[in-house]
Length: 438
Image 1: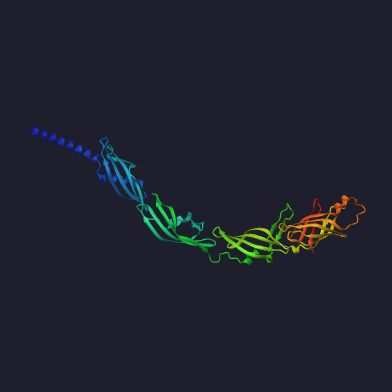
Image 2 (image 1 turned 45 degrees about the vertical axis):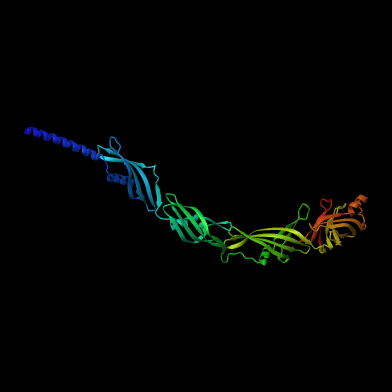
């Protein structure tokens, strides 16, 4: 009987030990939530060495019927660095290694859930100021580079929405350029892209109004502008008709001076003056349109360009009347240059006049004479002699030669500065004349 009892006890003991071993193996191959969270925190901390783990939450877990045992979990991890709070989702797989009696974990990002990154603070003052580096502000139709010329900047309002990643900053800005200054207010709208704040829109909330800085405005009197014109040269006429000439501007000869307009460009560092005036010469007056361009350089204003256009305004025909003396190369058998005098009188409104051609010892009436008051061209056609000159002993005396010798026709132009009439004999190749007012 005693033997049987021992047998029963031994059998019961063996059964109890078997049940205990089975229970122990089952316990080792399962993970509690707290143990799983420890694995997750360790893995994520190794991946994000520059972040602090704020919270870990197991959203879902499964225990598939596999060998070796596995655990699967979907986990939300909230972490942060110095600027951003991150909410991310992971898919963890845990596999039991029997020989090492431990769990091995592997993870990937869970692409089925949307991660998020929320900034911890709005745009800093430094970042707001740096955003001006590429900002151009339109003032009076011109771009002002705020990043280069902003001098006095203050933040007057900031509206930050961290949850939606938006921030608006209103700044008062003073722009100081070479000659102008402008003050206004601008709103800078930022968006957070998950990593940093970025400027995406700007709006002028208080328009920028420009004005000249003290001592920088170009202010010129009429006398100062006229002095700039002094010594400049007008071009008149055309070489095609032989009336091309240069007319010099002298200040005392300028009248009816008017500044018709002043315009500016390049943020007022270029000033363009458009002028009109009359240039009064003794014989003729010229209407002149002038453009003078000033540019601000190296702390001062300098003339950078000038354009002059002119037209003949009027001619004082009384200055044409009188004696003109000089030289003439007549078409003669001797083909020599002779001293010549021309007396012009009776100039009519239509430009016709009378004249007498006077070679030494020879005189002729002018049958026709015409002065063009628009182009300064002049023509004189002598056809009648008052006194017949004696023929040279060596010269031929046919009627044709006498006609060529005694009936010259002059074409030329009045030259204002020299008060001279210059031209060529009609039909001649090297024959001409150059006479000045006496």
